[in-house]
Length: 117
Length: 134
Image (cartoon, rainbow over all chains, first blue to last red; front, side, top):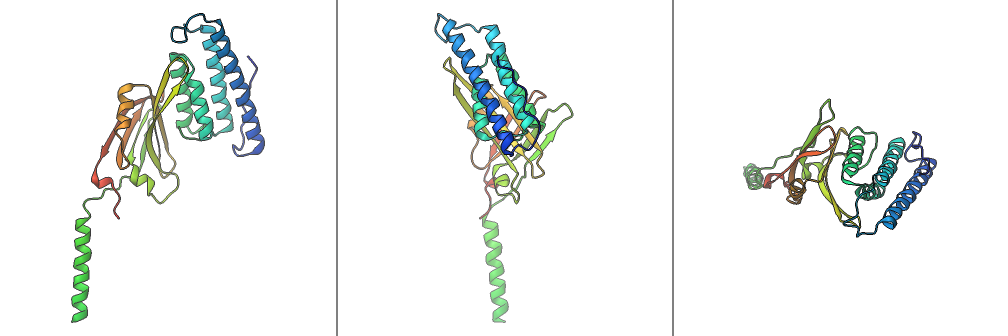
């Protein structure tokens, strides 16, 4: 997995901040896609019957957690970014999905991430 | 004398119009956040929408996402008071998500959440008195 550090704090509307966020998001999404592709390639059964790979689940969860941390660092998330983030959260296993959704909601409730669901 | 009569008639018409409008209740959005970060929110959608500020809102929604291995359904509610106090929650409970579908344009909405941000209750009441007066 690529090393990703949360975006530094700053104005969420700044151009540099946006570029940094976009770059982070691209990296995380590429990583998620790679992990999902790898998991599907290794499976010999249908997707419905496919057991979760704990290692892949962990990596996917970490990637989503890093996205949330990046948005926390930026201080804001747009509606489009929120949709994409939720789409990524939906890909996680049950436990990770609940954990990451909780992390996101708590960040919204605390005001650390300004945005809407 | 004629002028006084006209004023009296005008007052009567205005009073009658007000009486015919029915009961109107304006309930601004209120959000309570507890020390453990659990909380609750309430308010009518019409009061929020027609409030004299640009931060107040309340509502719930559902997002269905096809992951390729099935459809994940998130229900969520969110609110902001005029002062910017925020409340959010999400749920995968089919019963709570079903209650979101019961909401209407003029619903009075309530929701509560636990310290993890999970919705613990979602309610609505759709009444004539939440419809704004003309």
